[in-house]
Image (tube, rainbow, N blue to C red; front, side, top):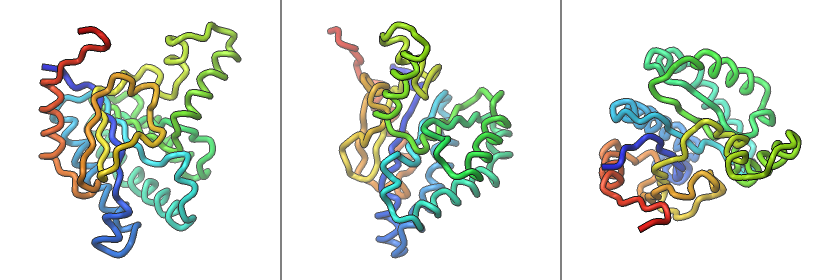
Length: 225
């Protein structure tokens, strides 16, 4: 029985769900937050240590400005209204990505949230925001050369945004799309990947549990027999 310590999720399908149900992509993003809260609570119940959510990629800047603005305001509202609840549940929030390029108000709120939850230990939720795996790898290698240390696997690991975070055991991508979309390319080398047809707002706790149960019986060889 494989223990599940780290689950990563590409939360795909919010926009399509919104158009289908409300004729608004933004409505889908709002609905997707309900799924986020449900999955966080289930991770607590399942004693999962890390949950990484692909929230906004470096390629998402290509989207309409109005949608980007809505996404950031939605995140700001979530952090403002839910921070005390997350803190009571002993949840630590960490943001990974090129945070320095985000709007000033959001950056300040991120720093405040990370500081307030920094000592929590039950579940760490990693929010991949303005994140791109290729940029992350370039950043790591540049840092290695700046530090004048040896370029090897261990040092690349230590200088990624995910430093000190165990690689994911499971990656789930909703939305009936089968690609990684520049997400954690280095960290997913031996991760079990599950592609889910349902759009993110339709993804239920029962779907999540089925994937966890499937993983527990997988034989993980890591290159051996």
